[in-house]
Length: 295
Image (cartoon, rainbow, N blue to C red; front, side):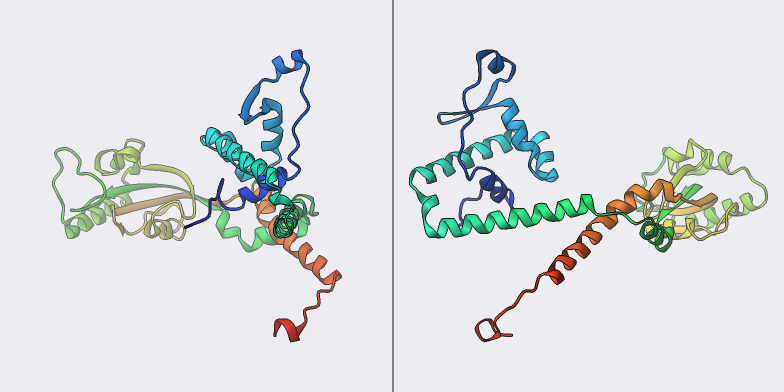
């Protein structure tokens, strides 16, 4: 039989550590009670709105999201159950047993270590040179393209057949796409052809305009063509599960460092925090007895 686990993963550890003292708030004056209503009753213990919110706001961000979002009631019910069971354990003096004291101490150490790492992430000094270096090494990831396309579907395409349209074989669709490219190379109006010929009716109505998009936004075959073919030229038809795409890249540019700085810093902070952890470990020796623990 699996043990009962309240709130999942490490949330129970976090909750139990915050409940370890088992303290109950002193009664509030009547006027204050009216402004701060009781939102949770656990046995004889009453938890006010402000007390519960203070508790939730002290939890890690991912748990706060659950507690303030669609699982708000579920988290409150699980918290109440956990607190009820913890209080019963205290009545039975389980918290005073040697095993309980060791486990509580271990969980407290684990929680403090996690909180230290989060603190290191927020307090670590961000080096502008490191941000610039990361940006330069990942510049292609910040590239955007502005393009148009005309889609020619074939049988079993993932795009529905337009009303009154003939079902084309793969070879027929390829031939049509090549003919459209020929017309465009000869000076044909891309937007006009897209409106009449594209099987992507959504973008077709907009002259085939896809707007701006980043790498990885499109299916791989389309993505490769859009980020490699010459700007202003109509490329050779590209086949995907949707059909044959006739693509014209109108613009390709990189997002500026100023646009990406916050995202880069968010990416770098955990790595810089790990470096801080390694520095702490190096500054404090750890010795393990090989005879007892082995090598």
